[in-house]
Structure formats: structure tokens, C-alpha cells
Amino acid sequence: MPKMKVLVIFGGESGEHEVSLVSAASVIQALDKEKYEILTVGITKKGQWYWGIDPQTWKLNNGTVSSHDVQVTLVTDPANPRFIPVSGNTLPGDGKFDLIFPVLHGPKGEDGTIQGLFEIAGVPYVGSGVLGGALGMDKDRMKAVFAQAGLPIVPHITVLKNQIDNDPDSIRTKVMTELSFPVFVKPANLGSSVGITKVSRESDLGQALKLAAAYDDKVVIEQGVKAREIELAVLGNETPQATVPGEIIPCKEFYDYEAKYIDDSKLIIPAQLNKKTVNKLQEYAVTVFQAVDASGLGRVDFFVTDTEEIFVNEINTLPGFTNISMYPKLWEATGVSYPELLNRLIRLGLERFHRLNVTD
Image (cartoon, rainbow, N blue to C red; front, side, top):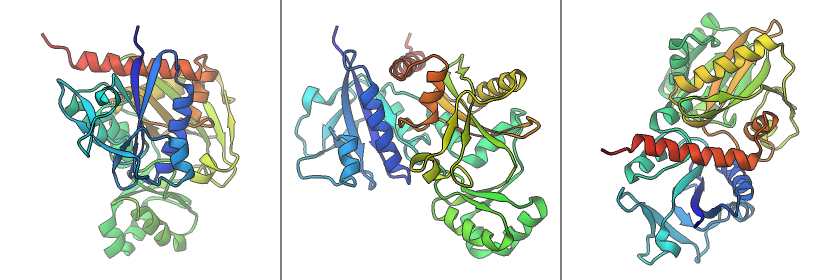
């Protein structure tokens, strides 16, 4: 039988561009070469798409595009979806593929925008659809959905960049009235802890708000809690399953970008928790996944206090896939190897596509 053509897309315009390259390199390395023909498209930080890019090479040369690289675009024709060169030439295999595996993090990658393009083109892809991606990216709307589903969340405030620029005093008053320090200030639509600041005193709040607002027009200010950081991975479509929990021991004050991808934070899998708490975490993880209409994969992050009180932090619908990322490590500890995990994600992507595109 011919190999399935899996097209891996990576890079992108978000602040998580470099993380995407590392994740994509790991995915490409782990995909079964006997089963799949691997094609690639790299997206530059300016949003240009190039065929046949190697993510490791791109990372080494800071995403530099050479004169030999072929810029392409996706033909949004459900009867004949394919990539074509902008130059008008042809691609190997006429640019055709069987499934897209997006390894994109952050805005325009996992927020439902590129998924909308895939839907218009009529192509199968791995991961959540438009709604799941959008809710999984926007921390403000995500929390609203969590609250509606009866999930426990920490107190928070959402403010707009316009308010930060023009009326910072009212924000400061609201924080002082409704929350207590420390608080975490986060861009509403970003991941990998980019732009996040832990604020322990009022005098540092303004700078943290400006940093977060540099990445997004909406900023979420969350009540800090003294708790362990626990994560579970979820896999599935209509009947998702959750892994054993893992715990992060940050090498820094909190699990920021450098702690995740550069420094040596400690991952404990499985986390040392009593059976009742583990069962509750798994139940909550599945509820979170279904509440945002996620598909395929998701990593759900929790806070667990010393008394084992649980708070849902967030879901990441396209979590990191680097060799030190929690998502594949959690599934490995639950009995699913990295290559088999990728196989299942591909099957789930095809399953979702065929379910939603059944014609009489």
C-alpha cells in the first residue's frame, strides 16, 4: 500500500515560532517512516509559507529564507486540495497530501484561524477545530466556559489594552479591591508562558500590564495561589481519555518560557497524589476538554493546594511536542509511546474529518 502523505506545518507568526520549530523537529523524527511520507511547510514570522523546509535548519539559521526555497499557497478547493507554488510552477506529487499535522503554537496557529482555512479547503488535519482552538487560546473566554461547566477556577480580572494605556489607575484599584498579591498578569491569547509576569507588589503591576499588552489587546490578571502545578494530557474525540498526572517543579519562581524550554525544570511523572485526587483530576481534564469542544489532543493544567483543593488553570489544545514536553511524556508514562501517540492523533484527525464530512 502507498504511504500516507502527512504534511507537517510549523513556524508561524506568533511569539512561539521557535518553540514550534523544536516541536516539529521532534514530531518529524518520531513519525514512522515506513508508514508515512512526510512533507513539510514552514511559515515565516511574516506569514509566508514555504515548501520542503526543515525545521532544525530553519532554527539554526533564524528562519532565513533562501532563493531556492519555494513559496506556496494552499488551494482551497475541497474537490482538489493541494499546495501550489506562488511562482506558478509545480511541486512534487502536484503538492497533494492526505492529512495536515499542524505543529503551530499561539495565535494564527492553534487559535482556530488556520483551522478555519483547513475547513474551507476541505482537508483532514490533526487537532481541534475552529471553536475548540479559539476557546483554548483565549484565557478570558476559556474561563467563562469553565465557570459555566461548574469547574473550579481562581478569581481573575480581564482588562483591555485601551484601559491599560488610558486608565491604569482604575485597573490598579480593581486589582487591589478584588484580588490580593501575588497575581499573575497574562496576555489572553498566547501560550508557552510568553509575556507572563508574577507580580508580588503594587508598584510592579504597571510594567507587567504593559508587557502583557505588547502581545495581546486583552490581558488576564489572575489571583496567585500557593499550589503545585499539575498537568494531564487528554487524547480522543467524542470519548477522550486522560493520562496519569504529572507535576512540574519549576527551576525558577514560576514555570515561565525559559523554565519550560531552556532551563532545567523538573517533571515528576506520575505526580505523588492520593487516588481520590487523581481520579478527580482525570474527571476534570475530560470535562475541560469537552467544555471547549476540543478534538484529538489537549493538555490540561491545574493548581493543587497542600490540602489537595483543585483549580483548573487552562487547556492547551496544541501543546508542546519537544523531547522534554509534558504531553508526550505523560502518554508515555500511561503506556502510549511517542510514535504510537502520533499514529493515534493522525487516526483521530481522519476520523473527525470523515465524521463531519459525511455526504448522503
